[in-house]
Length: 333
Image (tube, rainbow, N blue to C red):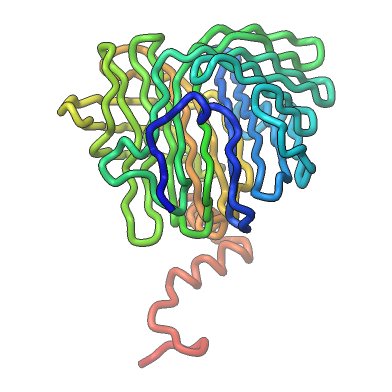
C-alpha cells in the first residue's frame, strides 16, 4: 500500500486506521509552567476498532501528583473527530488545521484550560533522511507553540502564558521494538523551537526531529547527548545536547535542573517526563525531556547509582552484575 507523507489539512484530524492490533492514533499536549514547579500531560488515543483512551497528569517536583486519570476502551462513534473529541474527563477541540487547539479536563478538584497556537509549521518525521520508522507510526507530526490558560488545583489557580509542544501520530505502533528513547522539546520564546527523538529500536539508532531558528525549519541530522541522573528517580539532573541540522547549523542546549517530573508506564516501558529551564543557542528557554526505559533496567541503575546493597533487591542486582559466565546457575571454570 502506498503512503502519502506530505501533510494535508486532513492530517490534523482523525484518520481511518486498519483494524489490526497495533493500529493506534494519538494526540499529546504538554506544558511546564515556569516558576510554579508544575507539569501537565494531556494524552488521548484511539485504535482501529474505534476504541479510545485518555490520560491526564498534573504533577510537581520529584513525581508529586496533583491528579492523574486514565480511561481505556471507550467506544467512539466512527464519525467522531478531533474538532470535538471527549474521552473520559479529557476534551480536545482542534481549530484551524495545524494552527490551534483547545484542551480541557476537570478531575478530582484539578482542572486544565489550555489553548495552543502554533509558532512553527507542523513537522513530519518523514522529512528526516530515514523517514518515520514503521514501528513508530505511518506518519507523525510534531509542532511547537504558544500555550495559554489556567491550571486549578483546589483553591490554587495558576495562569500560564508560555511555550509548549504537541504531537499527533497515526498508524502502526510497536512499543516492544524500542530499547530506549528520549523525546525532547525545547523552545526559547517564539524564536527557537526544537523537537528530537533519539534512541535505539531494533537495529536502528534513531535521530529524528527539527530545529526551527531564524525563521527556518530544518531536519535534524545528528544528536549528541550527555546527561546526568539522580539515584532516586533515574531522571535528568543536567543535560547537554548538540544538534546538527540539514543546513549545517550547530545548536547547543544545556539544562542544569528540573522543576517538574512524572514517572508513568507506557507500552511496557517506564516514561520519565521532566521539564525545566535551559539555555539554547545562548538564549534562555524551556526544555521537556521524556525518556523511556525498561523498568527492570531502571531498578538496576537505581541500585548501582545508590551503591547501597543492603536490601535483598539490591543484593540480587549486585549478584546479576557479578554473574558473568553463569550456566544453569553455576559459574563456569
